[in-house]
Length: 373
Figure 1 (cartoon, helix red, strand yellow):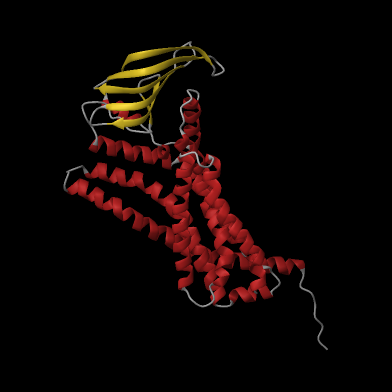
Figure 2 (cartoon, rainbow, N blue to C red):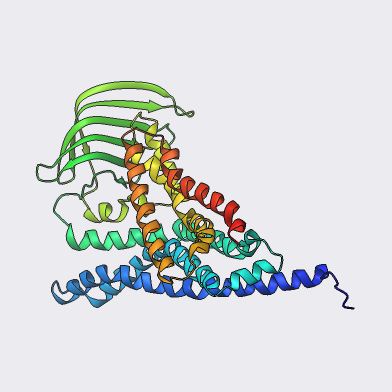
């Protein structure tokens, strides 16, 4: 007579640890391959432009190499979520196609327990992406754009761009909403001045023109702020002249788009300029996206892990689904951003709407996952 014994808790834990390592290995190598592959693909476009700079425009190889190095981190953080999606569908899909997933589940482990190490890996990838986006990518993007502006847009007059914050002197910040470079005209300008031993001053103007380092503002308002940020004094003006330092390097080095700022830095700019009543919805959405987009790796893994159970026989299933999900995500995100900028939906909702939809779908699929086995 055979006597059946119940496995000890220690043996179950030991078996779970072995399965965790095995599952992670199936995820890890496709992930590394995808990161390298997608990075090379995305770099190919800018690489041709940089080679053209070297061969045709005679830009030094040192400058071209620096631009390539500065451009690389931004590409890498773009590939991480997509690589996490592909590797989840390919790795777990392979386990399902070879019936290894059925064997794992027959050991008594529910499917949600099997996918825990992969989900944790997705969360770690999201954390790494956020740190890179905060600490490295803004600086490298800024250095790349600074070199790019110096090569292509250096003119006799200061370089003026739309929707960009830049430092126009030791204590003066500029924000311009619209620019007509041919006519040297701009609309909706804000100047924020910090004064020693005094409270800040805001200058807003509906329109203006610029010639060299002379700016002429029209139909504007001057506001002095107190220590709490409230207006203590204000006066209107019909015309006003501002003289900026006569150095194009000042503008090349200090212009910054939202991609060239960390989340903390962008928040400081938003708060500074919102005091004037200026709407900067595009930057508010970008501020929230700086947290939402890095979370895409975790969301993709959460969504793709239970979805991989549908990969019964076709190895192309994971690739096809990955392409569709990537397309939907990166089309829906700018659409939501546009809706927020046009005040259709709140900026916070716009930034997190796509993530929320995929997360809810992933949770629903996960709840139903054990029923498939």
